[in-house]
Image (cartoon, rainbow, N blue to C red; front, side):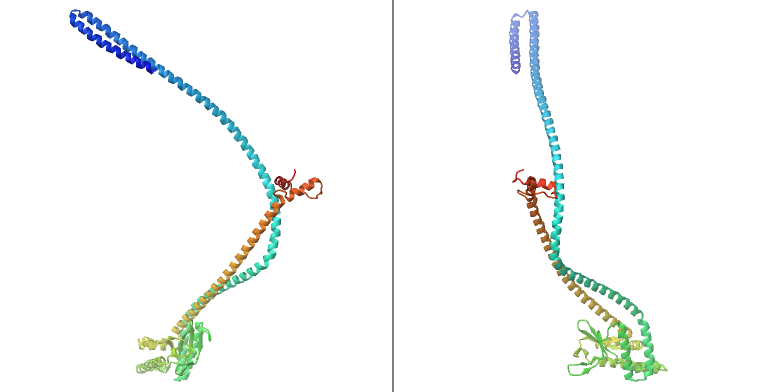
Length: 465
């Protein structure tokens, strides 16, 4: 078809060329004739019409060629469509066949799963019963073997846990009681001081300058304060301790108070109160001023005397840097400090601390709390030691439990092996026993489970059916 179009186009071009040649010749003839104009015009018009007709014929042939080409393409498309329809029909048939096979396989698979589940359930039930029986027997044997060992491990651990809890409870209970007792003792401190001051004034008036009696009375007040502090005699403190210095000189402090870490506090209560008694009984300001000066001088003299005793150098005592000078009357203590505002600082420079019943009780309560905290610390250490021992026992217990677990695992493995020998593999016991029954060798009163017999028979490929 394309070749026809090419030849038609070539013919058209040739016709056009002939036309132009002819026209040139006619023009020359016309020029020569120069008189026949009408005939020439008519002839030219006729030739133009013929040329137009030739062009139309060429276009018609081109259109016919294109139509033929399109017709061929349509036929080819129809042929391809027919082929695709045929392939689609074949694919539909194949798909239906595959779908039918798939549904059949699914039904067969579901049926097989149901049969397997039923067989597995039957076998699991028997296996569970058999395993429970075997494990109970193994557990009983293991229990008899390990009961004594576990008892030896658990009983001490239980006892240590009980001791640990008891110690912790005791520590907290004691701490609560101490806090309640401290509050009560602080509340009664003012009443005690007032009573001591009143008794001291009356007794000082009665003593009338007897230094020995005053010293004994001061020691008695000191003992009362010590009892109120909560410290225990002959444990946290000792009275009338005989000490010897390195040069052989003997010392006898009224009280030595012990503290943790081998530290001691010395308390001296031998201050004289004659001048203070005179101050209380003075009838005018002159006598009162003179007695006050004597009282202050007496306290300073006692401070100087104590600073020279050097308790810290005595054997058998590890003294702190300060010695407590105890003034048994609160008002006498305050009177001396009011008379000389530098008295307390001056005494401290000589390693002497002035204390009254109130301030001494505060110091002693502080020492008592230090001892309490020290005991709690010791208890905490004991608790830590008990916890460490408990942890060791726990490790031993866990190790023993691991051993028990290992024995149980070995028992399970032994059970699996025995069960395989019983009902699995070629020539298993159940299959052989059933074979004997079938042959008529014996007539058992009890029969084995059918599921177990079937499973054993299926796996026993060594025997005839």
